[in-house]
Length: 449
Image 1 (tube, rainbow, N blue to C red):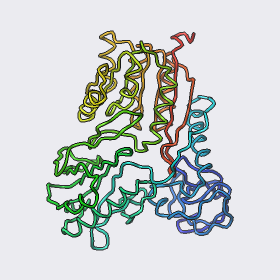
Image 2 (image 1 turned 180 degrees about the horizontal axis):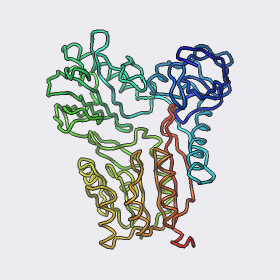
Image 3 (image 1 turned 90 degrees about the horizontal axis):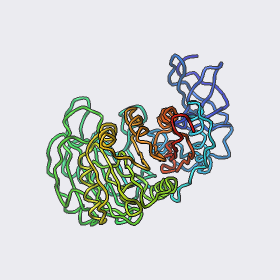
């Protein structure tokens, strides 16, 4: 076998990222835009030591679950990497994904069917769009997977349509003012990224330009066209790190935050704060989490990785006390402001890593009845797991965007006396391979009683 050779094969499975799995002489290849049960002719584009990658040349027999109408750029960029698969089958794929990672960790458990999304397109309330030079002019779009080669895109399919419209308008204004796109190789140019948030309930918009140095842009026409813009900011990024934002922000117009509503509560959202990108499904996600916790008026709860306080504030009126922590200072400022905004006087939020703060609270004798955790993709720090299990809450409700690290952490909790009771996937990311999962663990004691 060699690069550019073509083969006719059956598609046997999908990877966790939604690529078709085929074999040539028992050697596996991963092929974009291929579905289980299809017969395809594919061309080898790369061969590694243990597996290779291929490209579909022709679909000889189509899956009955193939969706034909979608733009292949959604697959090439990963924006909507399983959008060619019928939605009911996407849900089955995601359930299997959760079952597989749990099983590989030695956890055999009955996973619930994923809770489907009501809206499977145009649901994202946040966009982070790269800006690059393309064919001699400033352009917006998305990178081809595993590269920094820009593919121009105007309709992002899964994003709020107003956000899509605003991206084009901002792009056109940047072109009009002859502002240059940043070049990663030379380090020259001004505009790196356009970041936009749009509040689902209020419609308020935040626009952030990530730039290499401070610039001036006339946004008067833009604000007149999009009157819901409440915040325009610059983020000055001079380093080469992978983080989207730089360390310095400049407010160009409006205020530093926008306001949204979630489960009847109001939340101020700043530029760097975490906020679930699918607001409709987030309400369902949190409601499931609260139901699992079976909260009581006397409960003390910990809201770990709290962000702007959404999890804790939404249930503060149902419990005795809420403690929360987060590493981003601006998010904690938001959390404390959001407590006041919602007349919550029993919530306390502090800046710090979950593992450090948890250990300090344990030393002070704070004993939670319920711990909610919603960590980033890397999952929980082992020190946090030890400290939280040592505090012996009656249950831990874990919200995860990464089933693999979730499964790893469940094993750690089980070793410390906690047992898995519920596993519920919730589809916050239709058309993509990503899945959110809620689990509930209860304390059975060090001896498993």
